[in-house]
Amino acid sequence: MIAFLSGKVLYKGTGYVVVRVNDVGYKVIVSASQYAELDAGQPTEIYIYHHVREDASVLYGFRSAEQLEMFELMLSVSGIGPKSALAVLSMADVDDLRASIAGGDSSLLVKVSGIGKKTAERVVLELRDKMSRLSLPGTADGKSGNVVAGGDEIDALMALGYSLGQAREALSRVGTGVKDSGERVREALKKLGR
Image 1 (cartoon, rainbow, N blue to C red):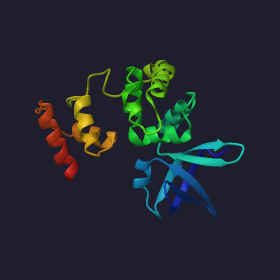
Image 2 (cartoon, helix red, strand yellow; image 1 turned 30 degrees about the horizontal axis):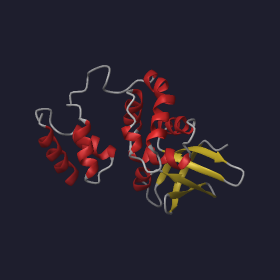
Image 3 (cartoon, rainbow, N blue to C red; image 1 turned 120 degrees about the vertical axis):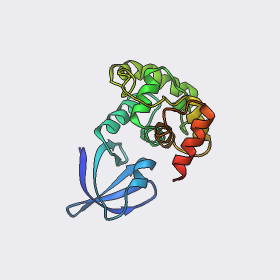
C-alpha cells in the first residue's frame, strides 16, 4: 500500500497530477484546491489514500494527514465514495467539516454535488460522535480575537462564487470592529479582490 509520496510534480492533468519519485511517476487524484496550488516542476509531499478495486488501483492525494483522516472517515459512511469524499474536501477545510458535523449541521454537505439531503444527514449521524471528540480550533478556548463569521455571511460569499475556505479566510481578516453583517461581507470582498 502506498501511504506517502515525496517528489516533484511532473505533469498536471484534469483533476490529477503525476508525481515523480526517483524514476517512477505516480498519477494522483487531488482536490480542486490542492490542484490549484501545485505547479509542474514543483517539489511536493502528498499523503496518499490507495483505493484498490477489482478493476482499478487509484491514488488520492492530500496535503496533510488530517485531510487524509477526514477522507477515510467520509468513506466509512455508506453511500459516500472516493469522488464524493474528495468533492467534500474540495469545498471545505477539515476544521469547517468537523465543526459542521459535530454541530449536527448537514447544510454544508448538501452543497456538494452528488450528495443529497439523506446522505448528508447519514454522514452527520454516523460521524457526529467521532467529530465531537476531536478538538475544534477557536471554539472551546475562546482565544480567537476575530468575530466569528455567520453562516449568512459565508453563504453570501459562496453565492458569489467563492469557496468555503476562501470565504472563511476573507471573513477572518475583517477587523473585529466591523460588526454589521453586510459591512463584513463588503470588507471580505475587498480582501478577496486583492
